[in-house]
Image 1 (cartoon, rainbow, N blue to C red):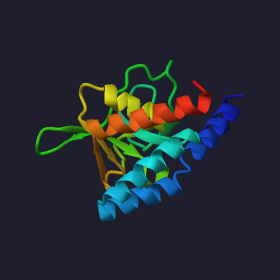
Image 2 (cartoon, rainbow, N blue to C red):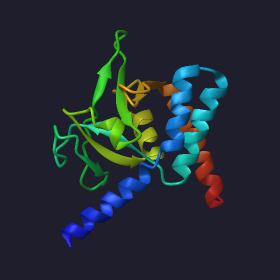
Image 3 (tube, rainbow, N blue to C red):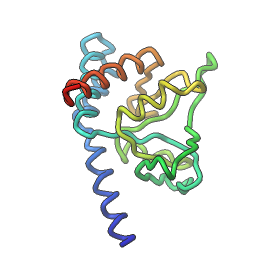
Length: 167
């Protein structure tokens, strides 16, 4: 039964990380830095969230083996106290590290990750008092979003969710 749960978890994670189209919009934003590319990137993230898209949040935590690049599905009852891996900028701002795929996460040898739905990650980061934003795909596209941009993304995700549920 345990092996079945691992296989099921791997399939869920694989589905949640089918982010190729979203990654294209991130790459476009990283290259162009235009308003159009930014809007396209945000829209891609909102749409991917609506289709059960996920992100890998880099963490250091009990219950998730560290140092092997291990990735597990987020479980509220297991991962109660998250220690979010972050980097500090020259201006003393702290940014969480988030990845769109296992391939982009692979270089993170000294950390582990949990896969969460995009909206869950964004909400967690917006509510965190210790963080000033996020870097998506650190070492690849290096997309930096501050709290203001994350807040706007979260508002759009919540609006889409309420529209889809008829609330």
